[in-house]
Length: 252
Image 1 (cartoon, rainbow, N blue to C red):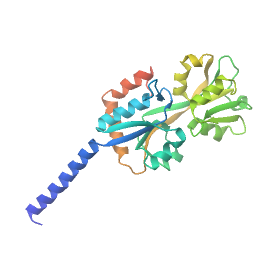
Image 2 (cartoon, one colour; image 1 turned 30 degrees about the horizontal axis):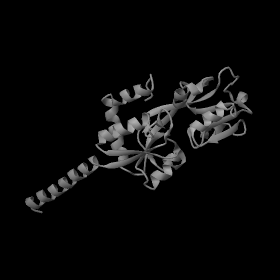
Image 3 (cartoon, one colour; image 1 turned 60 degrees about the horizontal axis):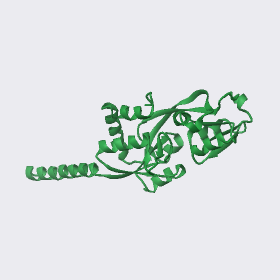
Image 4 (cartoon, rainbow, N blue to C red; image 1 turned 120 degrees about the horizontal axis):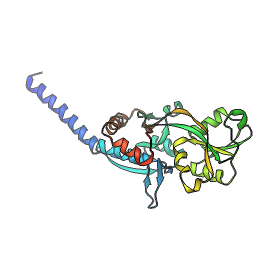
C-alpha cells in the first residue's frame, strides 16, 4: 500500500471514530426507575419522577452529553423491560445480585445499603431468629429484603410480600404486620415522615455489603460510559451535592 493510500485509509478510520464519538455524545437514552422508593425514586405532586436515583441519572447523562428521558416502571417489569429494549438502563436502587447478573450487566456501585427491621415503638421486637418465630413480617417482593426472608426465615416467620414498599408500610400501620424488613435508607426517609409516627428501627442494620448499581443490557457499552461518568461526578463533587440533598451522611 502506498503512503497516500495508507494515509487515506487512516483518515477514513479516524473520521469514523470521531463520528461515532459525536453520535454517542448526542445519544437519546431512556432511563427507567420505579417511582415508589422514596427518597431514591418517587413521583412528585406534579406527576414527575424525582429522588436520588433520578438526580444521579440526570448527572450521569449530563457527563455523557446524552439526552435522557426518565420513565417509570413497576418493579417486577424493570428487568424484562430492559431486555426487550423498552428502555436503555435502570436507575432504581437495584442491588447487584448473582441472579440478576445472569440477565443484565451492572455498572460499578453508586451507593451501598443494608437491611433493617422496623416495627411499632415500644413493641417487644427482638430480631433474633428464635424471637421472630411466628411473627408476620412484610417486605417488597423481588428485593434483597424479600429474598432474605425467603432464604433465611421461611417457616420461621409468616412472610408477606408486596408489590412496593408503600404497601408494606400501609399494612404495618394497619396492624396486619408485626414488623417489616427493608433497605435501611428508604426506611430512614419514611421514619422521618408524619405517617411513620409510632414506628422505629428494631435491631442493628445487617447485610451492609449490599451494592447498588445501574443495570444495562448484557454486553452494552453504555456500562463503560456510565462508569466513566460516575467517576467524574464523584471526582468533581456533583455526587456529594446530590447526596447531601437527601442524607446527612455519605451513602457511597
